[in-house]
Length: 213
Ligand code: GRF
View (cartoon, helix red, strand yellow):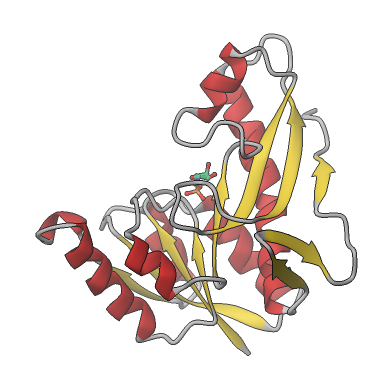
């Protein structure tokens, strides 16, 4: 059974989607640890309810980013994970940390990368008049939100959408997208070559999410 460590800072709805899918679909892997930089992250409670080990490392207690990342890596490595999953982990990672987990660390970003890396993606998509928006799961690389793309889900931007409505539609798509991508990784279905990711079984890696009711 492969081991997954999930890093969170907030509500952990993607964490919940991954945990539920791993059990319901009987994956060849399970979430064994949830690590947060915030003690009040709601996702920690969800982890405890599922009997998953938790750890909190407050980044403010460390002198600098490198010291925090070293402690974080020490905590993660205690669980010897095969895969590190960033799920709403609101920290910029040092190149050393990223290199340590190269090829085995995934992130979900709420936009169709390479468009709208960084923050406030939903607001920016509306302001630009985009007709579609979505989410991307990618391998983490040293450059923020720029790693090799594993899978993407597209949602419509509807007339009258505000930031909250669009964010909710994207998040619902993430809850389908991220578990699927994590499962592919665990099954060894992903091949990473020349900065591009393909699925060995040629499963579609991008799709149009159901429009909201
Ligand atoms: C999601 O919007 C994700 O795309 C971004 O952070 C948010 C995490 O939400 N990286 P949750 O904590 O999984 O509910």
